[in-house]
Amino acid sequence: MNMVKWLLVGAGDIATRRVGPALVEAKNSKVVAICDLNQTRATELARQLGVEAVYTDYPAALAESGADAVYVATPQSTHIDLSLMALDAGKHLLCEKPLGLNGAECLRLLEAARRSDRVTSCSNYRRLSEQYKLTEAMLRRQEIGKLTGGWTVYSTPFYNPGNSPIRKELGISRIKELGFYLIDIAHNFFGMPSAVMAQASILNKAVMNDVEDIATAILKFPAGEIFTIIFNCSSPGTRHEWELFGTEGRIHWHQWPPHGNGPVLKITGSGTETIEAHTEENWHLPMVEDYVEALLTGRSPVCTLESAVKTEFITDAIFRSIESGNVEPVSWGE
Image (cartoon, rainbow, N blue to C red):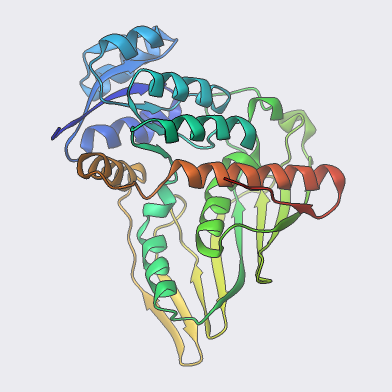
């Protein structure tokens, strides 16, 4: 194989703005079919991307499209079932985040993926950002010493482009949607946390229904490191920052995709070093290119399915802590 042929499932906001264009623009990548329950929407996206085949029937698309790989870009409540169907049909898989509704159902998909020989992944395009890659390299070289903790803030106004029902049972949650990226990166830097403590509030019940619009989660790791995640979608303006603490310095991202595209700051006893970083502005493109290269060369993609499942187990513990008011253990076992 020298070209990955894609079936794009879902023709909503994320598929139209970034996923579809990334699948078209990536090297050695071609979209051969689009599938969506709404034929008008699927046809319009197909026209924009120059794709001929349009389906409203997913099993037919899997059987007839000739695709090698499926990109699942549907609402998160459908991710696991559609992904399992793709694997059953012998297709490679890249699924949008968050992977599923909870860790248990995501583990079903991971077990199916381990039984197959297909290349699988769950989207976290921030791990392919230049800011992340620079930081990962600095940590590998221990440029700020041993990691001891850090914090991240994700503050953004309420955003719901598809006017989807805002209900926890559908997986529509600020912690799951916005937090997926942050939790996934935290455990890739620190390892799996041993416990979490979290609190959340619903300040605008008329809009958010039963979904938190402000929350804080504290992750504690086995060696004692502490990482704090702050979510807010109850205030105007956007703030998307990240800071890591080490025994010999700090690393700060103050302009991070998708709400900025600026440098990485390294702060040590010698002063502050500004290291330029600029990520491709279709944020999904580097991730899609990494996945395509992984599929064609036989290596694992940067964004693994296992990493996404671990993120779901941490998220489960965060929700348990919000409900109980207690520190909750994070369970994860092979």
